[in-house]
Length: 128
Image 1 (cartoon, rainbow, N blue to C red):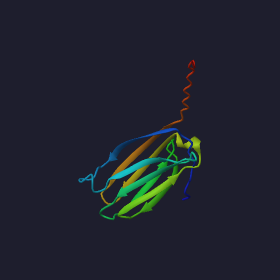
Image 2: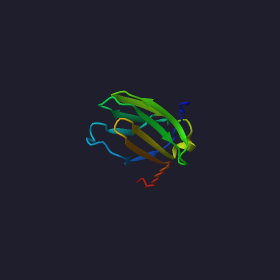
Image 3: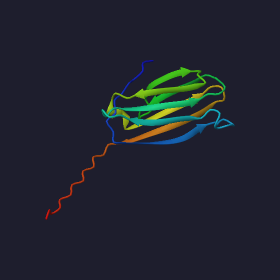
Image 4: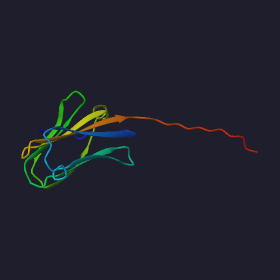
């Protein structure tokens, strides 16, 4: 499976997290987090952090707005920390990160809704 690295030119990104499937009994034991990191050159990164205390096998998948799989990787790290750089601004408008733990059958989903906005504030004042 190929890794897709996409570039993002976005002014604002919001992440909404919701769990799907069976949640682990101790939510903090296998807690995932996805954050957007803006950079000076306009590129953006998504940082995925997953605390997999049991060290069980899990997968990370990135889906586009139509449910097409852009990336999937399988891991067993206890402290997972990976950055995803997206190369196609068109596909970044709606992404879903899915973290599936095969040890406890838990699934966490993070939906990315990206909006590009240009704010222009012009003020003309009289100088005396």
